[in-house]
Amino acid sequence: MARAALALVLTLATTVPLAAADIASGKKIAQRWCAACHVVAMDQNRASVDVPTFCDIAQRKSGEQLRTFLIDPHPKMPDMSLTRGEIADIVAYIESLKP
Ligand code: HEC
Image 1 (tube, rainbow, N blue to C red):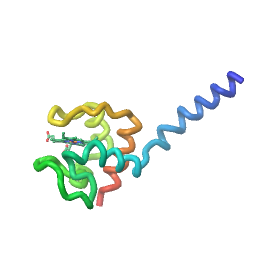
Image 2 (spheres, rainbow, N blue to C red):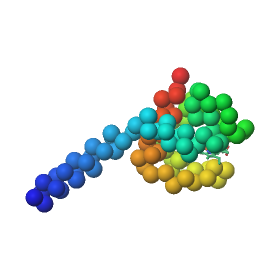
Image 3 (cartoon, helix red, strand yellow):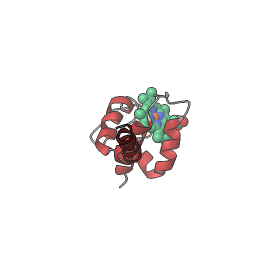
């Protein structure tokens, strides 16, 4: 019993991080948490001035740079305490905006 449970936990632990990067969920998080300041999607036309759009960010930053930034955001941007899963989803979403 305990062995089966352990095997299940190990399977989940190794498969979940890969399956976690979900573009659709990243878009939802972006629209909920980031759209107040950033233009996060092509169909959005209002946000703060002087804040880079996600499209623009996608062209300038690599996935690795985005992950590092979101784990410890720039002082001008609030730290939203995103989980690793949320960060993976948002980064997958931003990368999907690359032309
Ligand atoms: C309260 C406003 C605000 C919110 C909400 C916000 N940001 Fe930002 N963000 C900024 C500002 C302002 C900058 C520019 C910082 C600078 O230029 O120093 C920025 C910069 C960034 C950058 C770096 C861009 C670059 O050019 O290097 C990334 C990536 C980013 N934001 C992602 C996000 C994500 C993802 C979310 C949602 C989870 C989010 N932001 C929510 C204000 C915000």
